[in-house]
Length: 174
Image (cartoon, rainbow, N blue to C red):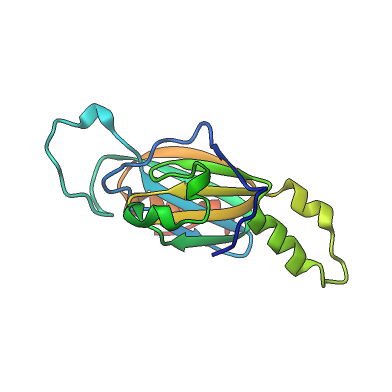
């Protein structure tokens, strides 16, 4: 994790589908150039007051798939019950949402770490985005150049071939 200073600002990330608050089952695949995150979306239209078990192979769900062109990511703690321990929790970061961190300490730290490189370009870091996706049992954060989003219907397992294609490796065979 990183330490924050007074400059970090938390803003809601617009246009991102709400994750399921019960079992979003976020899944991440990544290589050196891309990160792909998938999660089950909230489906208020189907809620009838009965809790159902959801798994990566559960049938007809709305799945958000987000591809990040970026440099780094973290995935894991904190969950919703320990979210107050996140260094940005006191600034408006909360569980079950997607956020943009303006003037990110993490990005500034990455720029300082890279400054020892003989071809270091500090301007490159000014265009990076620090994004946070807070789920029920985990938190995903990344620093990226850009991202795009699509939604599909099916199971998380069904989404995996689409996720691999988004890494740009060419044709994926099942």
